[in-house]
Length: 264
Image (cartoon, rainbow, N blue to C red; front, side, top):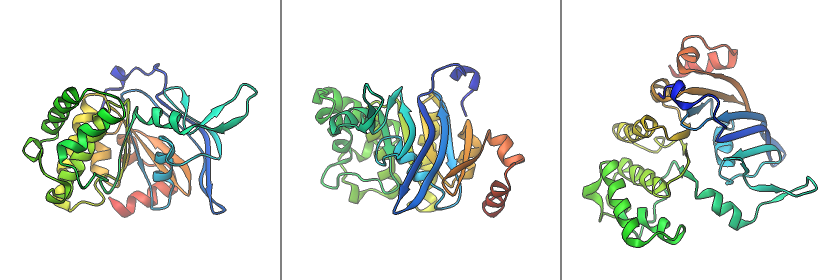
């Protein structure tokens, strides 16, 4: 867990969501969701299935569009732009891709390129997207593989890696773009129990070096240990926000109490 004194409580938020709404098929997925995430902060989203956690996370890098409200990352609207007369229009694909370079996203199911080695999966995007020289990208990829404990798997393709190893490569791939924000969507949910710890250890290391992270997870031990704040969602709304110590010791909302009683 980060020391909030070192994060700078007065720093401008890296993520700023205000009254964000999202509907799909006539059903409200997000209802007036408001949240700020400061640089260096680790925020964990928890709640029952269908609460809107993943949808909210996906709005932060434009994988889901918002219908109403405001959502900014690093001061810039995500997925839309505001014209001079105050009207909103969809952001261009180029603008959205430029934003996503600053936002790492780690999915549940790894999404590695199956025809590439672990090392190639990591250096490919910096070269193709950011225009980094291949020699520089390769050196960075090797350093990142070492960082996640997989130097010996550089030449292995995904089908030769365990689920935990694939997820660690996916984290290294996201870090290769040098993002300002890392988003994790239930990164351990597809893993066998014995593999969960190795992925959470990498995430703990990121938190320790003040990487700004928003994490959707059911791993309450991780939330208790690493999060600066835990955000509880239910039925598309944020119902409670607290430090891990306060939330787990004395949850205030009845729905939070019921949720935690079933999983702790």
